Length: 118
Image (cartoon, rainbow, N blue to C red):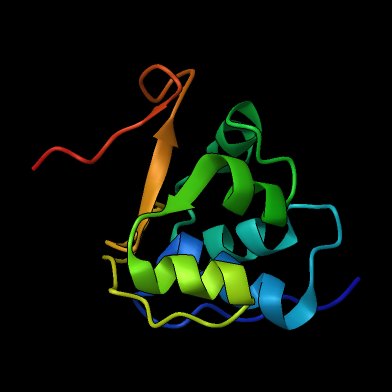
């Protein structure tokens, strides 16, 4: 099993997953999701289960099914397997930065992509 890359300070989950999957590939597990949770959001104990409910059974499926890019820069990074400069989030959150939109599902609001309310 490859060692997970360390998340950068204030890097969001989606940007970290993109960077890690581009660098090391996906091994069919939630290795990078769990590494992010342990380093940045240890209280988010249900995030792995919630991602599975949204169709994210491994790191690359999280990027394909649970989180989608909404900016031109993020779209290009996903299409070209390139790194993306994260817009930043507060420590302890698993929410994506402004480049991404999290799918809201089962417990997160109906299975649709919606913007966060202000």
